[in-house]
Length: 145
Image (cartoon, rainbow, N blue to C red):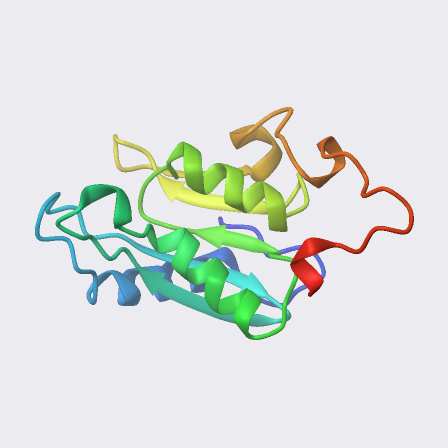
């Protein structure tokens, strides 16, 4: 049985369904590996797919697209994540930026069974905002010009 997201009334199975629907829209002509992902933020589900590019590094993973949608909608915390396979290292880092370490992540293993874990287990001792030096007093943050 899939658990419900803490403090939310959305079962992880609902996130998986949203990810599966998004996967149908994936643009994956190079890898032929369409991916859909869904994140829960602010009580809403944001689902997206991977979008590849012939210049391979410019492709976008489904999780990063879903996180981007949630952030664009004004959210700053992701409460849960679902996708059909384990997330790549880059996506694990992005998720650690916006998720609490205990935020649930559900995905299918290579054997096809469902795995429910959390962001902290996917990327232990992650690098994040707390690892960056604080701006010097009196200096304006360059990103707020």
